[in-house]
Image (cartoon, rainbow, N blue to C red; front, side, top):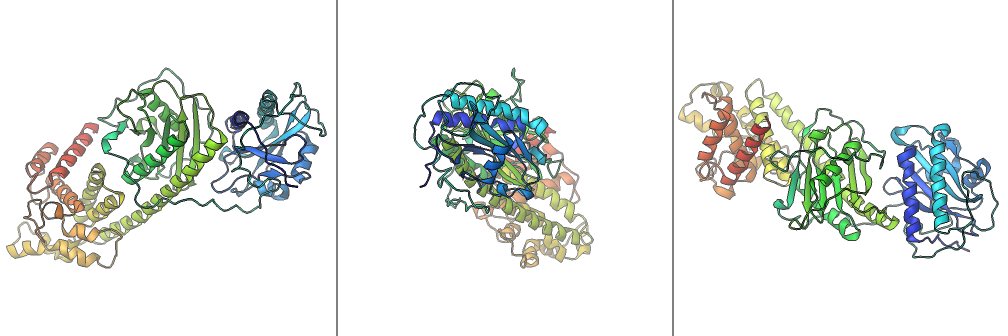
Length: 591
């Protein structure tokens, strides 16, 4: 006859989850599972767990007579298994880990064995040590027993095993409530197979993600020109909430970067759903990047005070020790910017690791002002939405890796032509750096930013098909000028076989068009000119003016900006001019 899954009051389940998370805080276990057996039932059923990798979970039930229960009954205290190769009874608990390590502790209530606490995989791959790890674990088990007593969870007729650490009176009665862990233990009374179970079907992030709203709803914290700089707070951040810290970045000299608009819009949507499903004061996201230190995104229904924003950064600083606090910035979005801001301090937060790969350690953090732990049903909802967000970030990261591959090819092309046109490579790289910054400033989609980056590197590659001696002349004849002006079209011939996934060749072809229609080669005007071409044309003009090319004395920073402003509406797109002047003014202020 099948055994019914455990039915606990939601308050008791929350209390068990809260105590269980102390294994992470006090012992350093990155994974934990708590099993209880109901009165007069022989099997142990999972009631709470944390830390299992995405798509896996611990077994839903441990049946009577299982070798693990036999060993725990024999040991009667915590025991360590740092080499599980000779412990086949633990195979089903090792999902998602190549070398799982265990600390297993029986839980006693008034001398009766009522539970089993399984901890796995210490932080940073360390081994468990009974002498060091058993005392805090016994204290945690004592608090679990106290919670069971408080909520009148009692034991039936079972073999008693004295345990001096858990005194008290056997409580009576068992509360009933909705089965809040139906999704956690859908098939009780058996162990899951040793292979990872299939990930539940979910709707993958697709096209047509609704816009996150106008950009003015996003507030910048820690940016020059944004809100005030960091202020010292009268409280010390509580760093015991989670022991997970990110490994050192691949590039310790990372510069500040930005989160692409599509990733921001997608996160705002997911964070909004989380806030609708459960009471949450703020949802924050850190996206790891090997080359950049990107801002933290923070979503909230009501505006966050500066102290609350600082608290988000303080928690992130603990998880990301390789990032210095002055380098961290925060982009926040609120649904109701017109109402008074939230004040005080967050009392509860839940950290979730989304992706743990050599190319990313993305971290989601859900905050509450109320001192109220997250229930199992709330954690399940957050995890489901987090999986969707993690898939989106994985796809975006793969996309970026392809982009870097195209950049590498572009750099190699420039290197191959250095002997023919020595100035081509430094000029192209300088143009590309500013063009990418300006594209980000204009909030262009990620594909446009990537296309602009590649097109800016290769915008003058057509010069490699011209006579280098002609290019070295101080003055050119009209016929030679005509040949030089053909270099955007020659670039298309040069690059036609590379099959870029973006409209790179078209951007290069039109980077000498003018806003007033007097440019070349096709005399396009205004918005008929690709936005990438308008960006590259302006940046190239600025780079030529400030570097002293074309046999003119170099202009100073402000003189070059003044000339560009004078050409706004004639040679250059006025909106691109405005964004570029703001970008360069900020760069000058930081310098």
